[in-house]
Amino acid sequence: MLDAVEFTRANRDRRSDWIPETTPIEVDGQNTMVSVNVDGFASDAWRKVLCDRQRPGMLARRHLEVCVFSYLAAELRSGDIAVAGSDS
Image 1 (cartoon, rainbow, N blue to C red):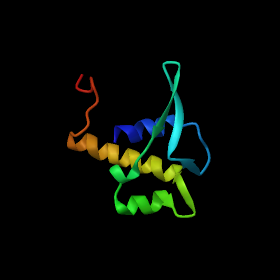
Image 2: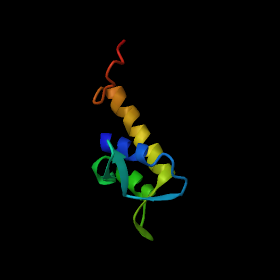
Image 3: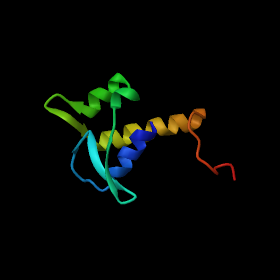
Image 4: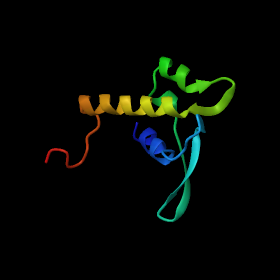
């Protein structure tokens, strides 16, 4: 889930409808690749919306953002993910 959030952050400036599953990012001056595995957290229904057989290796960007943040909200509600310092 946290990898999916990082992937979404790495692609926040993109405007295209479809984005690749792997994206290069710069961390501390070094280039690295960040990828998202939707099979790891998304349900079958979400995977049908996110992936298209006509575009293998590509994800629907807007739908991915909604999917990631809805799962993140559910994880925060359940207590499986917490924000450091949120109690103050």
